[in-house]
Length: 332
Image (cartoon, rainbow, N blue to C red; front, side, top):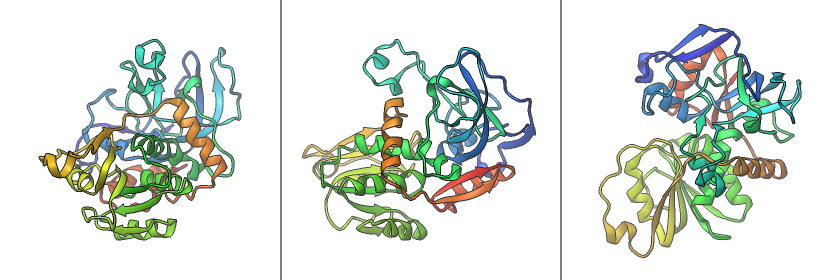
């Protein structure tokens, strides 16, 4: 089958991905074999390709926003059948026994594993997924629209929970790509006022078209103090202005798996009066199902930029250069 592997992690300009032909994967115990119909291109894929994240599987096939059709299953699998439409997400394995799993916080499981990092993902014609971690997809979305829901949407939802946004509150969003444009819609559907800070003019236009109250430059102050904020851009230098924009008692959630260094903070300006910073780590399966149920009930506008599977390296280059409108998705 056709696939892309991370051959030599490094700057995307140095072509770390290699297009190749690889054998069809065999589903292991409890796994499904899935024919990939669409795969979202996430910034985490860029971090894997460029080496911002440590190598977990040499030569890994990236991609963890996978939509496809079940074509085979291990004999012990229940709940899925050949022909079913499924989603293959980032979270691929947790132990189910540790204190974090027992508390319903499996996203913090020390034995967790991830699609497209620990195991081969969706930049290919076929992939596998443990049946217990495959997701049912909401009706009414095309395969291309469904793909970004599986990570961009789910992580944006988790970040919104971590931001502790009060009912009817004011939310600031820093960076406005695939995840942010979905989280903004969830927040607004719940009655929030959203202000967007991003350096990209096209992203500001998209934010306003979706109903944001304002859109300005990445480090510009919003027009009013924020109850909560989410930083989606992997830029640590945006942490101080985001904290400075918070009202008393406000919370900043940092949604990325990778962040550049944060500059020194001034305690009085950035943290005093009970402002707080929270990180976001993966998600639980329960959170994924909550978000997908929300997406089924509220038709979200999923903005996508399609690429052929053969052009996966171009999609990552465009993502790195902020040339992607909404979410990049590999098709076929």
